[in-house]
Image (cartoon, rainbow, N blue to C red; front, side):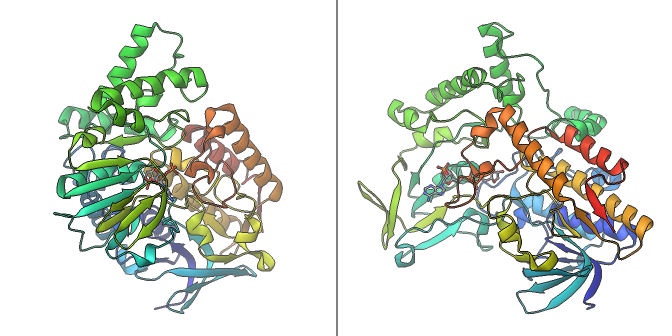
Length: 523
Ligand code: NA7
């Protein structure tokens, strides 16, 4: 296999796959290096029972190929993980991507010198490329809490994002799940159906609204295909209705009816009913109270319901979860909720300050070192040996979420400062990939095959300031979640996503390109 390429892409999830396709179309030689043994990224690793996309399948699909759109059909509104992985494989086969992907290989380090990146892999190989593009995912560096005693546990433990391929049989077992974010909320009902007993360890309750899964409605499918283009310029990359009224513009009855309508309809649109639900605490409180009342109605035991109700933070500041039967799971006789901190793991299970809880299997649904974790897991060194870990020690710097000053010819798909994690990820991925491909094509046309592009330090600082200001304009600035690094001890607290919306972000990126890549230095 050759070792010199125009481009190396790290990761063969939806971002890396599409990037490879676009690079080929430009005539660039490209290699994708992927740690897993197959394409699919998140959908390769997250095989836990109940794993599903919480964006509707029709919307969580590539839009760039009319042929693929025509040939593929989804079986239900929210596809489960195996079907999404089959889709990823289908696309990879359809576009002949596999031959340029090296599987089972993890990039450990990458260094820049004189217009060229040298990439080192965990099997000791050294590869070179003019351009390096990370497509490593925003939620891929698993966070397993460093609990004392974990190594003494007599049973098996698994993280939802590193699920064994052979599956886990919970039948007749006593199981503990730690964590009640999106992954926990999906896995808990599925495990409860199999296990003899399930103990859920909740540190912070989440707000969750129903997915309302079901068969695809052909009329809705037709409507979706006719309207799909609008998602590209919408705030979240979704074809949902974005309300243009304040929650206070309507009567309490109208407001309740609108919340109820969106709750019953299901999906990601619950907080889009009024424009100010994520702008003011007063409006947010109305939506939060609606969901709190729903939890009270769904959980039979009033004391358990109160413990499941989030109180300490506005709805939406931790990512709003989508569930299928989550709250009623606590009505089952074989499920116990524990809302005390986990202090240690012992050979027979989990201890809190008050009691020991027996478990033969522990499932950590404890999330990820989000957005920057997978990037900083590699030893990336830019100009003059500058380490990305040092450059980002106080928080990441990125111009448009795409490039960082001091790291020439290094692109980050869905990087910090991009809106991706607040949007329909696949629409953001397509935007990033198309922008990067156009940028590389323009660069080669204007300056030749070994041209160098780098984010200007001033443009980067201005963009990060803009990202901060936009968050300050909303409630998001108060977020204590993986959006702001709060879930990882010692991680700098910086609100990482751009909250200005995908449509505005796309316009900004297009404008920068139209102005000759304003803010970038091209040589
Ligand atoms: P999340 O949303 O980060 O949720 C992780 C959960 O695990 C959350 O409830 C955490 O509580 C809890 N947690 C984390 N560490 C601990 C420890 N040490 N002890 C107890 N509980 C802990 O990750 P998910 O995988 O659910 O979802 C990530 C995204 O993936 C999701 O938004 C979708 O986009 C898909 P905390 O709230 O931090 O108190």
